[in-house]
Image (cartoon, rainbow, N blue to C red):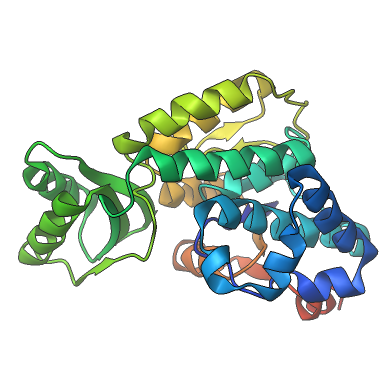
Length: 306
């Protein structure tokens, strides 16, 4: 069993996808399709930066999606590997849905551009925050968030792996939760350099706006199941895709449970497709006897070919 994994926000960097586009016409075509769909030179932003523009959520999301799908198309055409299931972390779920045939790529890149804008506009800049909490169990962290809220919002946003959970909410509440987490034995509590508090209830307005966009999107039949962020279970029902994507905006990402689901499905080979190696690192902690690989540049393609 082979699983394709797709990264989310935070994996972006200037130069991503450039050597793929220079060496493979199918990758270059993906970047050209993204440029046409958005009416902007997204390819230049991916290849050259600047980093500050690439970090803007409305740019980051289509940039990572496009780079991931460019790498996927090269993998499909040059090596011919196909997955038995797919998953993506937050934004990466859109890449997984393109991979599975549920979303047309041009539609997906337009949707995530709007998704990024909606998420950024849901909370005024500076009033929301996220932080990584290391070395604390789920139950203790959930109690910490309840105690730290004090009428505001703070809650687990990403369950990435055992002992690595990201929280999100109002800035003051996140600060209180970081201090309380340390008092309860957390090894570290680190603020994250993000522009909005993703995957918490403050994002509900963004989800409502996204629902209006998704209402006009045609979802195709899915060739493989996608393990969803919201439920951490396989979904191959096209009629459920849009609601799951709406819910995903304000619900926590159940990534640890997603990998546990894949282990139960007897996945033996995990291939992370797109910029960065964050997901591969998380998988290594859980699926220790599995083959874990990356595809983000020409040298990765050569390794897989060999």
